[in-house]
Each structure stands twice: as structure tokens, then as C-alpha cells.
Image (cartoon, rainbow, N blue to C red; front, side):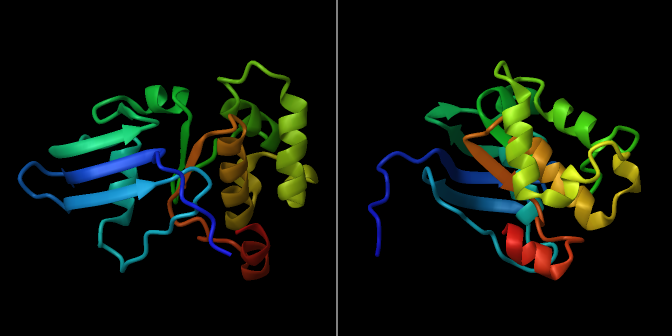
Length: 182
């Protein structure tokens, strides 16, 4: 049964041009709207600009042209930490955990903006990713690739974001775990 789409998008990307080298735009005229409660997937071959789009939305790249609005406010040009403070989180495909910290410490790092008690939030993360509960005192650098990916997602969820962006979320996941989590 189709549910009505809310009239106000939580994220709007309007005619965005961006890239890593000035004058060589990987993104050319990208438009996207995400509404509250939606699950959106950007699909394309390697090199199509999927990661570039996510990095641009999240403030790791500055668009050369166009607008990006999150919760109705312009965010193009803001730093990533400012975007997190507004309620958006990003999980990169690689280098997405603090390897020398434990699972618990990684989750706590993700909660640096939280003013509410962390244990109920952690309990929710451990319920979603039970393997992490068994490894809470283990250093993240000793986890498998899939376990690191789960930890990175869990850390981003600690701030209970309004929008969570995942770059290649199933990378390194054991297929049955990916089916269970996604």
C-alpha cells in the first residue's frame, strides 16, 4: 500500500556540480530529494560519482555550483562537524572506525553530541548488531571487515541522526549478515 510522501524533503540537492579538481566536475547537474522515512539507494558503476555525491552532501567536498539543503537550510560549504550537529551522519566505505579503540569506545566517540544517557542507545545498537555486543571490549582494528562496517554504522547511529548516509554499506559484510541488517 502506497503511503503519501511528506511534502517537505529532509534533503534537497539542486543542480549540483562538484569534483575533486577545479574545472573537472564528476557531478554535473545532480538533483535529488529525500523525504523523511525514505530509504534511497544511488546505484551505478564504479566511477559514476556515487561516493562523490555523498561526500559533497556531507561537506567533504564543496560544490562548484548548485544548492544543498538539509531540513530546509542551506548546508553547501559547511564543515562536516557542523552538518553532524544539524542531524546528518555519514559512514564512509573504508577507514571508518578508530582501530586502536575498543568497540565500546568507538560507539562513545560517535555519541559526542549526545546529551541523553548512552546505555539505552548502545543497547539498541547491540540489538541490531549482536556480534558487536560480544566484542565490546575488543579493539576495532582486530575486527573483521564486516564487523568494522557494522561498528561504523552503529557509531553513526549513536547520535540518532535524522539522515544517515552510507557509502557502500554492504562492503565486507558476510552476505547473510548483510541481508539481516539492510
